[in-house]
Length: 213
Image (cartoon, rainbow, N blue to C red):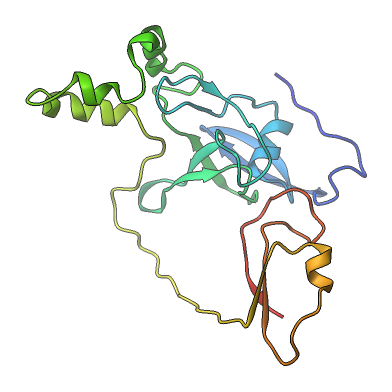
């Protein structure tokens, strides 16, 4: 299925003059600087991005922010693999590698979808009633292998991280226009925590980054 973009001035956060290359499930694609992975996939006509965690039913992009339940991907490979990242929150960068989760051998042809034929016999929590001791130790590895979403890396993370603690007298959660102009105590530190790119933005596209005001 071919994708398309709205013409300018729609997509004001996208720099159409700067192309960005990335791969999804090994397929090379291109987007623009300012895209999220989700918007770039939609623009390239990619509709199927994953499978449901239990019956492996096909899943696409459902929303545009932190509430996204379906477009969950794994990033990178080896020790740098990062599991379960929402595509709607991931800024597109050059060389990004993303893969679908919870599918084998591919997201388009997932053998796990065969469980859908037995859906009537697989109610919520069926494994707690059907596969009891002593046979539980036999079935547990297979059930755990088919459920869940992304895969955590098996190798130790080679990177080093710094921690930063920030204190504030006033914390504003959600940087709306009203909260930005509301009265505040004098000589007090104020931090704003918002997931949108601008205080008036109605869509959530970036992670929360508190800053001292």
